[in-house]
Image (cartoon, rainbow, N blue to C red):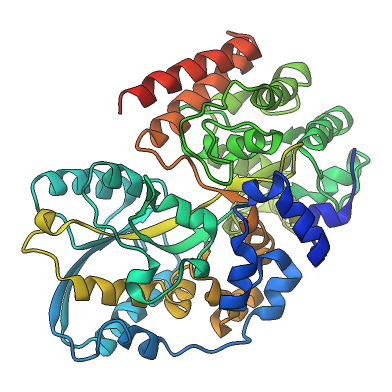
Length: 502
């Protein structure tokens, strides 16, 4: 087992020579970093080649930006117009700070553009997608919509979105992660601007590591190590080692299995490559089969993961983790706040155990594989609907004004406060990023995973591939209904048939 502390928490930046060697190989494709990395450093002052927790902290709070001045270069202050805007914002379950920042966002936009009349609609994810589909068909779509990173391509593929990118609002593509730009690209054309991006990390219980004879401060460096660590925890403590999630039609499953698949060198399509065509099927290549075998080894051979993994989402990992019965899981930085909340609500002996788990909670990078270190590149993007599909027509300048405002360094940072990160790379240099790093524990670790982020395939069929076909493949293996090879080949056939329908 590898026990490199640097591998686990990425405490040292790559030197320039190391980075050039890294980008010359397969690693750069997985990271979303390409030859554009050095261009990004020169244009934004943010260098993805140095992307570590320490580097992120070192640049936070080092620059100030004039949001008004940048926006007024695109749309003047005295512009008169109207805007309809749909987004998924804070809900009743959101912390108060999200509600406060949402109000501040709209108050600040009103002060900046007092003559743009805004009709904004805050919808939940599922309601928004269905409503958008119906509204677009009925030519009653909003001018601008902020959508989850996976959803925009559906509307772009239907020809319902305008070509619209960072340059449309005075920014450069170099100000955004390559992975984020992939998510707004369809057939070589750009259909949106990234608003925020996030990645997950590996969380572990240091006390269970110690009890299993593992270094409590060092997570598994590779996925092979994770399999071994999971077995060691099970064998030595009787507790489950890893919180595997394999439920069908649940977004938690691809967010945890795809990083494993990509790390080995596999994929659904060729989405992990630097320049994916989405025409090659990778799900049954040798690397994908090795990733599937690793899951089989944990579930069937070693029995080191919950037997309920077949129906589990991440929510089902929370109770056993806070009870000290689970060694490792993959989740957002907000998981720490969840555990704190559960510990506060616990009583008696349960509270003692929960407090100990929180004290022993650690965050590190998701393990790497033979091909790369990978994580799902999440977030959201702003899109503009075609004029003839918008009720009352499109006010292009009003659309530009809100997107320039929302995707600049200031508000792309503020609106990502609790669990995400600014889509605009310059946001990482703001005072608000510094405040976030100082107040949100473990945010620096999940943020340091961003260069390893890979977006799901930017195709209209991505939701069915990720939520149905891939989890079914995994279940076929875990239940021993099929061999690894047969399950992978079946999934490949299903993906091919689905793609041929377009």
